[in-house]
Image (cartoon, rainbow, N blue to C red; front, side):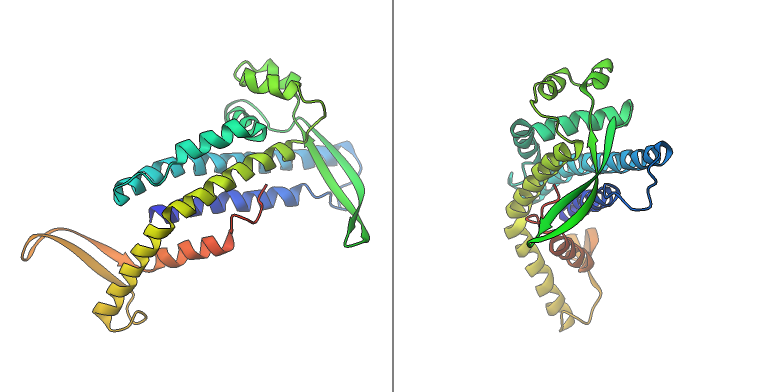
Amino acid sequence: MNILYIEEKYDFVVKNKISLDSALEYPNKIDRNMQSHRYAKSEINRHFANVLTTTRLYVDQGVRYGKKLDRLFGEPLVSFEQWFAQEYDARLGYRVMEALRNFVQHRGDAIHHASFGTYKEYIEDRMVIVRRIDTYLDPLELRKEKKFKASVLDELETQEIRITAQSFLGDYLEGLQVVHEKFRAATKAKYIEATDCISNAFVRYSGSAEDVIGLQAVEEYGPGQVKRSFSVLRDPIYMRDFYESKNPTRMTIG
């Protein structure tokens, strides 16, 4: 179940990023007037806040359930805190979004400026018209808020070119993607061992792995003396496998 909880939170991040990408597409129905653009910017801020909030869920619960897994495994296999720190040090986008997430939770909106543009792009030698909304942070505005991490602002202000907020977010999410890859690799052998044990138990006690919904595992003090018991179900296995196939980490979410 601990592995499933972490996979669920990663799925939250993926789905919210997909929703943000949709909001950043410049729809034909947006009128070219200030009110319409303000509404579109507000929607983008909402989606940014959703993504950043769910990344916090993933980070916090990854650390929590990772520690539980290490206790269950009896060895330190899951090193979320170390993995997150490595990506934080390696990626400017990671540092920017971590600081922005705290800002959004307690102070204000993620996006200060948005530009609505139409561009020509070539896909398989065919020209297509792409409508896109580019979003930007304003270091001057952020510096007015004393709580925003000063070292991150210093890094932002030294950038020679103006970088979109979604580019910083993409770098951040790619860092989380790398972490999730490491998590899956670290737990793979133990997960296979556990699922094989459960499948064998279903066969042993039911005659077929398909004709029973669940089993009850019992720990005894002695013969007939129950210390504790818990249900053994296959549904968490199915759900975990579903999330892994639905969200392959090599599929870029950044």
